[in-house]
Image (cartoon, rainbow over all chains, first blue to last red; front, side):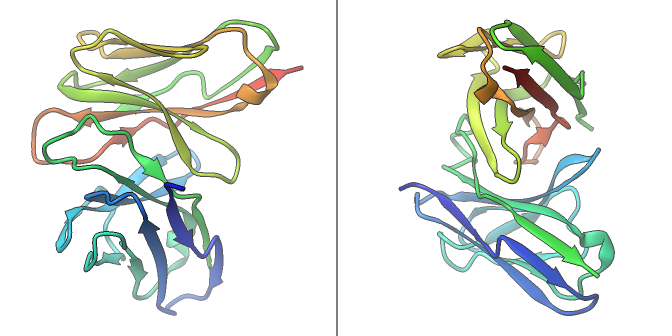
Length: 116
Length: 114
């Protein structure tokens, strides 16, 4: 089944403790992206990747890191989480957005992160 | 900077009604517009994608229209059912600049009452 898989589904952590949220897709998609969703603010893009080893900042990249060493994986890293990073996080992927921009975006089920 | 607005934020209708959800955007230089559905505790599912050269797209009971010049899109849901209850979001993809990212609206939370 074609899907975007995020783990974990729920995560509670404390300020300053490094964490990684994993994202994997099995559709051979070039494009992958991370969003956070907050009440009243909607979905905001954190980082995106057009292909392996190519990443770029979205609207709210501060406090986050990403890497794209393999096509299928796009982990989100919080080196020193803070309470304002408490949010619902989504990973998404699609086929090549550089040359074929009319491609639907597929989303993972989300990771609810709470930073205490 | 592109801004996407969805009004109303919430809508409640009785089962069987036809309804329209609205989406407006400030910059008409878009490549496409997508409508998504989000169920509670779940990710987003793409419903319809309208390219900038198109006026509408249809899928089953859903019909999305696009008026790029006025910066508006509507999602029409025919004969609504309780299973249609969800949050509906629209998002636009820019046609200019280096950004390769969608800008989302905040969504309309739809409740269809049995």
